Amino acid sequence: MRPFLLIPVLAGGLLLASCATMSQEACLQGDWAGVGFKDGEAGRPQSRLDEHAKACSKAGVVPDARPYFAARDQGLKLYCTPQRGFQEGRLGNAYAGVCPERVAGRFLAAYADGQLIHAATSRLSQAESDRDSADNRAEKRDREASGVEDELKNPALNAEQKRELRDRLNRLRSERRAAVEDGRRADWAKRDAEREVDDLEHRFRPIYGGW
Image (cartoon, rainbow, N blue to C red):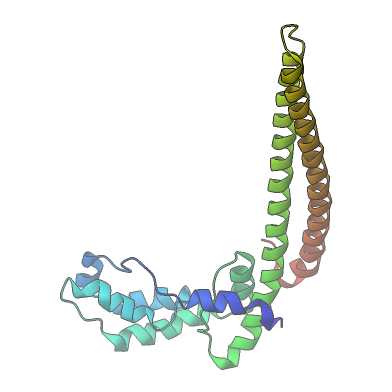
C-alpha cells in the first residue's frame, strides 16, 4: 500500500456537491432503495443522503433512510473490490473512505496501484502538451524572426531603426533557442513517462487485467 498517495483524493472525496443530487421527479418517485444502491455502487459517502434531503426539500420529500442504507450496503459490495479500486485509482477518481474495514485494505492497495498508473499517464500527457507548446513557440518565433529579417532589407531604414530591429531579432532568436531546448526536455520527459507507463502496464495487467 502507498497511503501517502491517498491523502489528496480522500479530502476531495468528502467535498459536498454544489448542485442538486436528485430531480424533483426522482424525489417524488421515492425509490430510496434504488438510490441507495446506486450511491453505494458509485462509492459515495453516507453524507450523500443529506445532499438528497436538501435536493428533495423543495418537493416536500424526506428520504427514507432505512431502505436507502440497506441497499447502499449492497451497492458497496460491488464497489469495494480490488478490481474496482484499481479502476478508480487509474481514472483519478476520489475515494471517500466508504469501504468496510474487512475489505478496505485490499481495495486501498489496488487503488494505490491504480493511482500509479494515473500519475504516470498524467505525466505523459503533460510532457506531450509541453512538447507541443514548445514546438508552437519555436515556430512562432521563427516566423517572427523571418519577418524582422525581411524588414532589415528595407534600404530606407536609418541606423537607429536597424539597431532596434537587430535587437528584436536577437531576442526572437534567443527565445526560439529556449523553446527548442524546452522541447528537448519535454521529449526526455515523454520518453521517461512512456517507459514508466509500459513498465506499470506489464506489472499490473496480469493482476487486474486489461484496461
